[in-house]
View: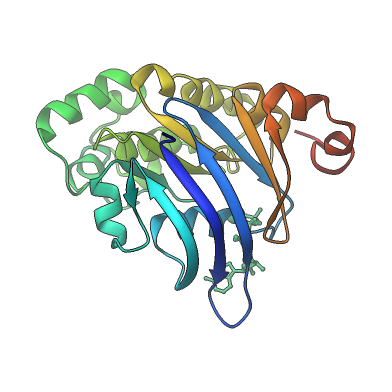
Length: 233
Ligand SMILES: Nc1ncnc2c1ncn2[C@@H]1O[C@H](COP(=O)(O)OP(=O)(O)OP(=O)(O)O)[C@@H](O)[C@H]1O
Ligand SMILES: [Mg+2]
């Protein structure tokens, strides 16, 4: 059974459908890239999985449970972590407090220690306000927050978008370690080439539909893919 199965999901924020019938699956421990042009509906797809799109039809099954009937908070509770594209940490709170305020975490103190072990830069800066962190540190904090509840699936919306080029590789390396910690990842990326390089499979969205999908090596070798979607990254 797939960890996540999205079938025929469609909907949007107002009258018009942004998502127009998307099928996608993620197996346990897989990293899956979703790429595509600006406005294709990538962030909306993740928001639909999290229950943040007001009008949404189709089927989303996670770990054998139908998600569309659950509130966003309850989706986190059953093992989905979400790192939004923007505003993914509380700027005025310290690093430590950003970890303390994550809801629905069992064994909180031990989890915080785990995260500080895993992210030494955060341990060093644990009393610093998050807004004073560098872009890479802030991204680590956003990850640490999402990992606090030991998710089986992490939804990452352009985690490298705001980073300087020398930090991009570090964040991809961090993502590549997730399967070793029993977490699968759905990774939205403009840097499709680098993202596919650490992924098992990929999907390319255009205007709310999947226009290409397949194993990552196949997509990296696909001529149409290279021409239309692999540009710079
Ligand atoms: N909260 C919202 N209310 C209304 N329309 C929205 C909202 N969020 C996104 N949209 C619209 O939905 C469409 C898809 O947006 P989405 O953010 O999913 O694209 P994206 O693929 O993530 O793009 P990008 O690469 O720029 O992040 C766009 O036309 C956008 O203007
Ligand atoms: Mg987006």
